[in-house]
Image (cartoon, rainbow, N blue to C red; front, side, top):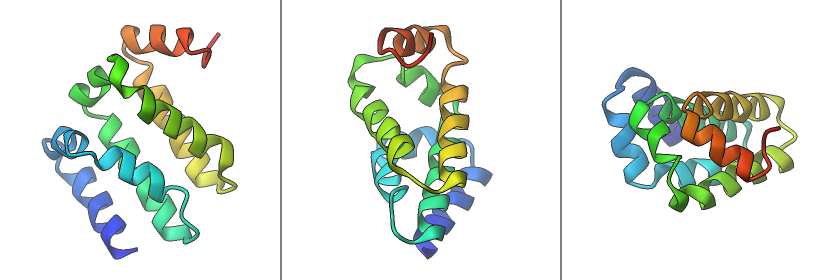
Length: 114
């Protein structure tokens, strides 16, 4: 749990690192950890995904087709978790990502929004 907590604080405090973490593949890793059995691990991992989504470059990346796997993973976390904090954090992440019109179109085409 220490690693996800450190990464959570790192992404919270250092905004310039968020896009680099996204490019390095931390989003998929953190989404996997968001389904952990350990409460602190899954909650810190979900927060990491949210903090990455606050970066404009990361948000812009989500309008590209190659991020479909990450979106599927995010929806899997939303559908399978019983942890209300993780679910709320994933919903906040999706809300953040839909602020860009291209992302909203992609979500609409995927049937995620009406």
